[in-house]
Structure formats: structure tokens, C-alpha cells
Amino acid sequence: MINRWFTATVALIIFILLFFPAASWRIQHIARYGFRENVENPDVLRAENMQLKSELANSQDSVRVSPKSLKEGIPAFVYSQYPMPFKNELMISVGEKQGVKVGDPVIFSIPGGGEFLIGKIAKAWSNYASVQTIFDKEFKMAVRVGKNGADSLLSGGVVPQLTLIPKAKPIEPGQIVYSASPDLPYGVAIGEVGVVTLIPETSMQEAELTVPYDPNAIHSVLVDKKDS
Image (cartoon, rainbow, N blue to C red):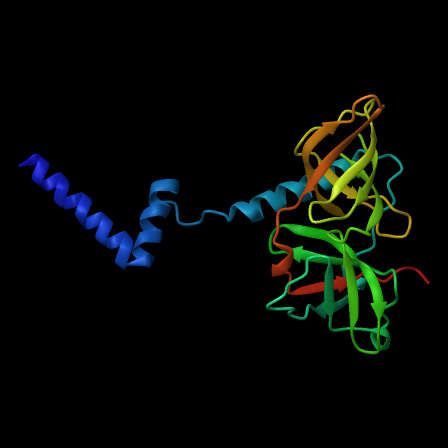
């Protein structure tokens, strides 16, 4: 009798999983989190954690120059490039008429997760502009890593790389990476350290940069106005 009930229960669960997606999601949700209703999205939690790391790193940086408020920025929508999304470039809905200039930094927000630097204006037309992102192989900028502020050169690419880091400045996966270039807002989070590689026969090390978002899912940004 017990085996019969067990078999019937398993068959019922399989039926629900296959033919009732909403109920299937709920079962998986309960199995993973129990009966808690308000479980945060893991990506949002990671973004929030990175934002806190950035603030902590900046607070411990004695030469920090506070970045300008994003309220000074120019809001813009990101045009769709479907079905050929390119991570290396974004097209946005503001241009020279709105005060956008080549080189202006571009920042976006994750709901509940703070601000991230995605790139800078590469070209500007009357009412739209292109953004060179950190995923462009030609993108370069000075950054700092972790609360100790190890200097590094961020080299863009499909997987951006943190380069020219002295081995004398140890870094670890999970440490925050934030902007430190004189032509961009100081202290804005960019991502965090991924896999670290020691370069043989040199005094340098490198690391991958990881980010807590899908660049193809960015639908709006702020163009931060540089000082004239």
C-alpha cells in the first residue's frame, strides 16, 4: 500500500512539473527557499554586495575624490539591436543637442543594486550617440581593486581583463573593481575580480573581471556630465 501511494505521489508531481509551469516554479521555490515569500534575486543581492564593497573601498581610500551625483546626468534609453545584440557598443537616445559629448562616462543602475560604469561616449550625433562599453576590445581605463586600492589597467573584451597588477599587491576573487581614471567619475563600481593568474617570470598578475548583470538587458542609462 505504501509503495502504491509513493508511486502515485511521484507520478502526480511529475504531471504538475510538465503541464503546470507556474505550479512547477512554486514547488521549486519552496524546495529551495522554504515558504519565504520575499526572496531576493541572487543577481540583485550580488550587485548590492558589490556596491557596498565599492563604498567600503572608497571610504578607506585617503585620496578619494567624491564622484558627482548621478542626478546631474542626462537620462537616455538604450536602443534595441535585436536580433544582433553587441555587448561592445550601445546606441542611446540622446546626443549633442542634449549636451552629450565624446568621452562622457555612461552609468546605469540595477534596481536595489547601486550604480555601475558601463562605458563612455564614443560618437555623438544630433539626437543619439554610441557608447563604447567595457566589453569592447579597444576599451582601456585605469581602475583600482579591493579595499587596498591596487592599481590596474582594465582592458576590455568579451571577458574584460584586469592587467598590469604588481604581484606585490595581492588580489583575490570577489574583490571590488572601481573606476580610478582622471577622465571618469572616481569610485564607481565596475565589477569584481574573477579568476586570478600569476604571469610566470614577471612581477605582474592578471585577473578576469566579472559583472552581476546581462549587458544586453540594459534599457536605460545616465550620461554623466564631465566638467567643461
